[in-house]
Image (cartoon, rainbow, N blue to C red):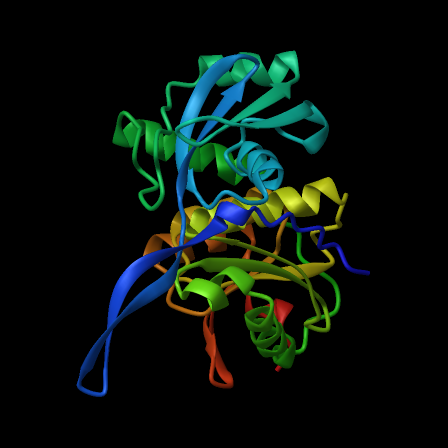
Length: 280
């Protein structure tokens, strides 16, 4: 089964004048670079966040962000998503259920332009600790059955590379992919921001009604606490990163029941939590 239904926006990359130095010569020409634009997320008519993102798969981004940021508790709480282009970027109007909107209004958290800092907009350390405690109660992933073969992680990471079209064109995009238990990559989402790429993946899986306990996710970045948090909220039990995790990411993964693998490359990987999901 192929879950991928990617919508590539022509503005995801652009060609700009540049001069390339190579073999002792400076040659003028053009280079293809990834674009990032402001994307305003508007819930029931109220602007909630403005993110910088690659302008593709924005419906997936909106649904995934809503789920992974716990704005909604299930995909059915999102009733409609409408994407419109504006002079400055894109406006994504998201119609959510009344109960979800009430929770959103009650939250004291602002998420404006966050691309790499999970603490941006949280008003106090106590608020941050309370959010993590709430996740511990609601976002714990149940253990899987038969362990995965370790080779599946490397098969998926390698297969995802071939599907990173934006990255191949520009050299400047992160990817998040979903693989089945054999390591076959079924869907890939890309963005200039690693968090955005994972949100887009979560949204794509939710749009497809995917069973997120039936496979695992791979990412082309380090594993921050927030990446683990998003995976746990989406019910993803195994997150495999090409680079390192942070110590907080390891603590969150352990508490949430997520298997966290890092340095998945060159035929090796490191398991930091819940190693029982993988065979020997």
